[in-house]
Length: 329
Image (cartoon, rainbow, N blue to C red; front, side, top):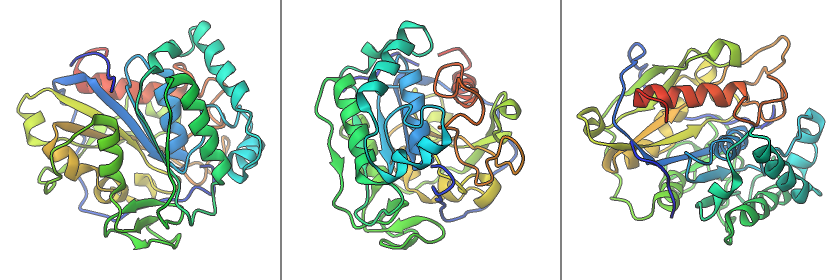
């Protein structure tokens, strides 16, 4: 496993179980172990996760995707996003790989050689009727080429489109609010173990979720604050890794409060494994640019730079990470 440094569209409707509102935004910084930074996401959040990983592969050392597709799948076109990037067909993996390599040469993303050996974890429920298996297969092939290693797909769990948990949420095979699927399957634990190797067993999440500022959020169509789970050991000065977890459409604080952050299952693993979990939050918009469901920008509604280091939302998440560390990572 390689970690570096020290210190979906409108139909992608995902949500989670709620909890008490967190306190006022906290701008504290922490000792960040930047060799332990990874990212995951579900549905539109999965598309955002791969964008974050590819753009900042010099910093982010692994990715997990639930119901997602390959980097730059939509190619800046909503029709493509709604088409082959959800319904399946020939996504054109070779051209997406070429785009990533050219973008690296142009300095728009980090050198793709950073991806060699990175862990990649992919999941698609057998009951998912929103994302076709072709799309996840394309993500598998994309990452297999650029990481230089086989990439598997967990595709045996009878989950509908949503985030699988052990007991939290609706029936496993139904796509219903809160779009967490109680499948007797701990997706958060499985993906974190894949990204970080052997972990201590999960424990009770005794720390509170807090809100943290998202610098530049207004210009990126994001909410002012993200959620974060920070174990007491990290508060006390222990060097901690960071896992970034991207919610899906209709799953930000604008729709469900801290539902996803409280209910997906990440925090219980973070509590015992010196991990901070950052939950970035995107806003919704009913005027141009249209994003009424509060989806992450994986087709270009912010601008054409959306999948690069110059992308507005990628920039906000990176700035939030830097604020955590109190320095530029």
